[in-house]
Length: 625
Image (tube, rainbow, N blue to C red):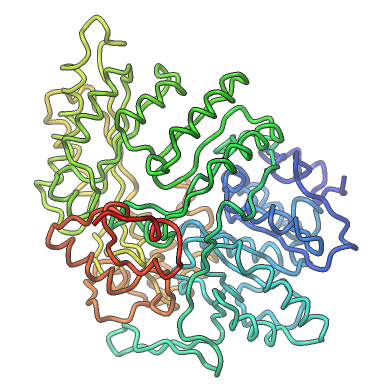
């Protein structure tokens, strides 16, 4: 095993030292003398969150299958170690070799959530890498590359990255690494490598693009600064997801992490088309993994990890066409070995409840419904594709099946929302509770009552959704809506059975700015970081005052990015990217939302979103309508 980067006395004084020592089961250690390229793969959050992320496990497996590459992992040090590393000037290191990140060829950062942006600066800073790409001259520093869902609007963090990979990582990395080797061997400069990289499909190199603004602060245009650099960048899509990289030996952590289980990704994309959901648009078209491949991988992964749970990963598992066959296989395999099966993102219907009844201990588990809106009118606006009848029928079946705990998820601040819609959250929660008392005879009621937890998050308009033009509420409006919801729930007859939680409003407002921001936001992020902001996603470490000061000092008006109504003709900061879904389709869906019109799902009727150009997946299935 490699010599540890941290001395014993440091490891003994920080919480959970196992976060920093590497050497876990299935971690890949190579001889650094025998590889040409070293990559530090980073998730900019604490180890337990980062280790639960499937995307990194897939890329880690892919890179380490390349003989000339060694990919290691790095996560954000927790606040206790962060302080020690700064005091003692210890550079951030990769887990496998325990060597400085600064000595790697690439620092590849996956960006899953806007509230991690200050943690990206923490990673760069602790690695002794200049925060801004323009200050990284020559080959003294790794090439800093970003990927993941947040790079569908990379502009607020563009000046901190050399390069962004837009789309799915399985397709172009080999070409990029070969280009890097060629440039290094040929004695070419860092800038020349980035210039050539900018011409590869799916690559965005911010330094070669310039933005001009109008007097009102909106974007006039964004243009490439050199000949041969593409004006529009189309996302990369892996169409053959049954024949691509997937880890049979995922790394097994020493300590309990957020998702301590084998994860089987059964499909990518979602047919549903909810208008608020970014993932549902950017991961189109829907592609299913072959059921034979999934069965084989499930067995191998369980054998190679010793995990006692397997989870099916997908945006909407119920829509996977071979789900019954896969579930039957897993029940048989896992039943013998006493392995739990976890089935997130199922629609609550007779089939799903039957399956959950077979694989879950009903006494311990609660069921999750996500109506998203209280009223049917608003569910039509957001294209949720769920009627009240569906919800109440599902609840009735669940209560008959023995469930007594239900979680309900709603959003507040959705486009066109009225006071009436908010009151309906209380009414619907109550109607679900009433179904329990109508369905379950007194003598069969465990604890005598149903437990319902209604939670609301605040709506944040995201790029590449039909709601990308929508105004967003202020913090005060959000809180007013939360109080109104609480009041509506309290006024209901069965409210003793209903608990209510809501998300933090100031974090939601900041997320809204970072999600739809432009390049001018980078200064605010850096200033907030300099004021001590890291781990903004963790409420106990979120310092709203410091962020507000940063906006003020940079002269940035938050309302410009949040509450302002955008015209569909406005040039948006991410318009130079093509996520596979046409802007015209998004405009049509925005108009339909305002007209309260529902669009059928992809399998029921094609909506002409543009994703059929990739030539596969659900777009090529024989369709009705």
